[in-house]
Image (cartoon, rainbow, N blue to C red; front, side, top):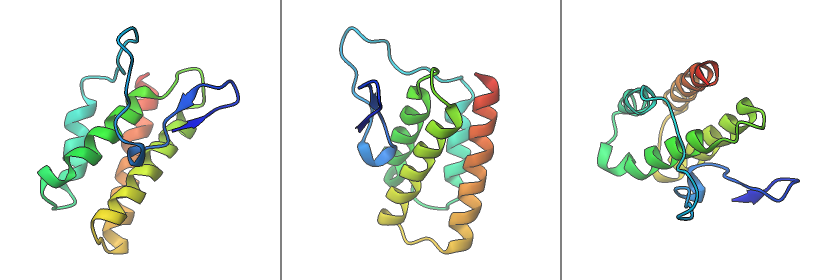
Length: 116
């Protein structure tokens, strides 16, 4: 995680791991449609779901934790870039498959931004 100008911790994506909250903080919130949609996007990779689980969970946590007080597109870009970096390190994907996955994530993030 990094700190923004105000000193708040800002997740940079799945490579940071799941967001850890104190017992006094509310957990990240996301629309109910997000998890099933993310599952559908990840299924397009054709990789074992159990091996993708931690990346998937961290990506969802990152999206849900994006501070509403900052530009959501910038926050979502950071989540996606972190996911793609972690995914590339864990699984060899050809450029075409990675590009299609990235574009599908961008569309999902645009829908999420519009929904918030």
